[in-house]
Amino acid sequence: MKNYNHYEIEDFLADESFADWIRGVDNESSEQWEEWLRQNPFKQELVHEARLLFQSIQIKPGKQIKDHEVEDLIFDMQQRMQPPRSVRRWPLYRIAAGIFLLMGVGVVAGVYLKKNGTRKSAYQQLISCSEKPLTERKNATDGSIFIRLPDHSSVVLKPGAKISFDPRFAAQKRVVYLEGEAFFEVTKNPDRPFYVYANDLVTKVLGTSFVVNAQPGGEKASVAVMTGKVSVFSRNGPDTRETKNAEQLAVVLTPNQQVEHRQGDSRLLKGIVTKPRLIQKNAQVATFDFSEASLMEVFMKLEKAYGVRIIYDEETMARCPLTASFSNRPLFEMLTIICKAVEARYEVLDGQIIVYGRGC
Amino acid sequence: MFSSEKSSLHLDQELWNQFREGDADAFSNLMRRYARLMFRYGSRLTSNSDLVKDCMQDVYFDLWEHRSSISQTASVKPYLFKALRLRIFREQGKWSRFENLEEEMPFSVEFSIENQLIDQQQRAENKEKLEKVLNTLPKRQKEILYLKFYEELNHDDIAKVMNMNRQSVYNLLHEAILRLRKNWHTSCSYTALLLSLGAFIASIF
Image (cartoon, rainbow over all chains, first blue to last red; front, top):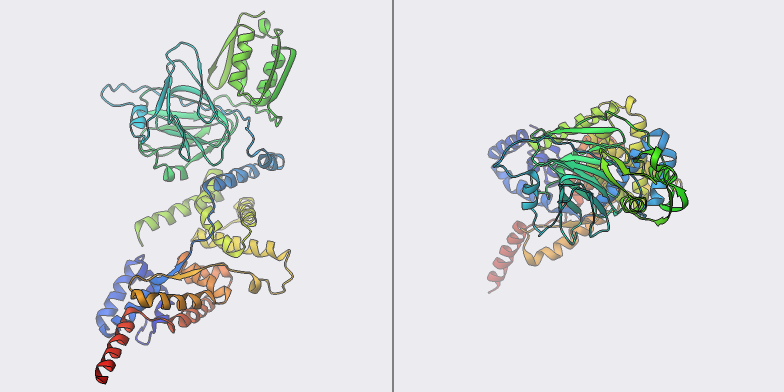
């Protein structure tokens, strides 16, 4: 310990170990200071004043960066960090801000069933923790159903799947809870990120479309991205308000990557999907005008625009004629209309769209 | 050290090392951890928020591009602060006619004195005086006070960020606090004053 006997207030304040002591960050210096004070009781008052002055100096908070600005910044950086895409993607992203972004993202969370009759399912736990009354939609049919969310995002629920959400979506973030499989197309709103809670995994997007599948009561989950970009993290508990820390450990998934998660393990293991795909880049405005077009042409255009695969029987359906005009319609709405026109139906399976029809 | 601080430093080290090995997720997490702090500091050096954000991106981009040649670092915060500070100065300098850039660069910070222990009545007067002292300090002294009291950096780190030697940091800090101390009256000295005033009044009657 230095000789502090000739110290004045300013000397104490400019001393590093004094600062550590006041802040209580260094136990060793605390002990030394307290010992010194015992030996030099006449310095008590001076030290007391120095402490008061130290604690009185405040700095008014300045400008803060908003959460969504941080996310945008990181998103931009991630684009720049991938050399081949950096040149075109970066400025485009800025221009596209605010426009409904048409980007296909497929997420599949496959979950293995765990038989446990007494325990509440993850989904039930999640919805019981919500502060606000939630609206629940359930698909009891054996086909997919289309749901429009309050923010004009759309969800296609697969048979047996259910979804809960605040009917007003009033909070700063848009949260939905899912059990089963669903396809989402989320309207872009950087101020209100969109979260899907499915078992222990949380998928966060600022505006895009993707598929989530969470079977009831699972202990293992995985998310695989076909196209686009989402961040995925595991939640610590059922309280959806406490996602901040977990979010810091988020894994950002780019196409053909997947993440696996086991219940009770905080790690997210990143890997590569079993069937990697090519991603078609297309920055067109989502206006589709089909005049006596063949179904093959229509599906090709949609595939290219959304980066999703549409599988159908080319032999019987490729030449079906179609006349339709869509402007900024979500993919599934278009598909529903197209399928109706050619007397077909479709389903989403494993991030792909499968169209069944007898042909024309 | 408290364990939370220790583990946070430990996480920094881990992320930093993963980033140096080319792990993009670790790098994203580092950006997420420090974006707020960097913006907060950068905004003191320029009022142009877009410039701060652009400079932050440039800093990140440089780091990422040179990740393989970047050394281990004991603490990430001063490293990032220093890089951001330099970048902002350089960008500002492009449009500046000043010769001695660093001296001309602003550091906008508003100090206040918040002491519940000072007597209510005297507080306002004294507070005003002290705040005036603090807020009229030279820019670089304000910056040192900011880094020490707000960002809680140690003197080595402040020296690193501001590209000075440790002794100069200490000297400037000492000088600033000395000016402050000369205007400092606490409840103790105020009570002493009251007592002596009381004694004086009593002696009159």
